[in-house]
Length: 309
Image (cartoon, rainbow, N blue to C red; front, side, top):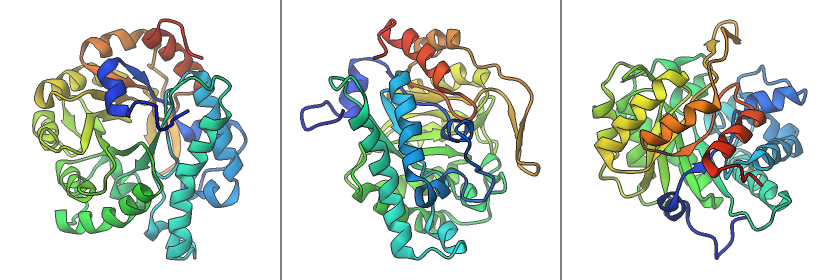
């Protein structure tokens, strides 16, 4: 578990690669929980918090070194639409960190250093209409910064090891998030969702990653919620442009139908791809949507040479 004597995540990444968890939504759904509403997995913060801890524990026991909280779709605005007060919303954001931290305390091997990453999804995640895969919401950078800052402050106050600025679709939102994270006292990683060698909004990845190169708060950059075949090229670009450790956690390779709210196609995610991602510069490796504990165990075996627990 994390402790005062455990290395920071940045120090650990400097020593070698680490393993991220997989998709929380698929793990929770496999346990029988309905995530079909607009709050997605964040709904369980209020209704079934113990289920969230159990899902985190499943990934830690599978070999993950870092767990990402279920706050991706948890926003003050989204909770307000459900009649949840701002004070209660702040409590639920903090709870997302505590539930992951509780899972670290339940891991059987207490000698393992474990870390908690507080998820900060894009503005489009709050809209719950798939727009995080398009970006360009019609808001200014200042407006996006004003949206993100209160949630970042609430999550930072809960004491995560790192903030996961994830599934970012365009450079405008990245710029806003990078502004909003300054001065919070918690390191962060910045992870884009991409298509080929561009952001979902179509900007070149060289331009996108360059935004984070000189931001001290950013300890890793990379990609998530993309198809596995796009990871190696993006990782190499991120490492070259920023000189920072690279984080990668693609989805299974299936496609999300936002209108029907279902996944289509087939999985192309395999643990054999991990070696290539490491060669490209990846130091924090896991999975996103539809990647479960078995895949994380296989990644951990590839990264840690078979020592997962």
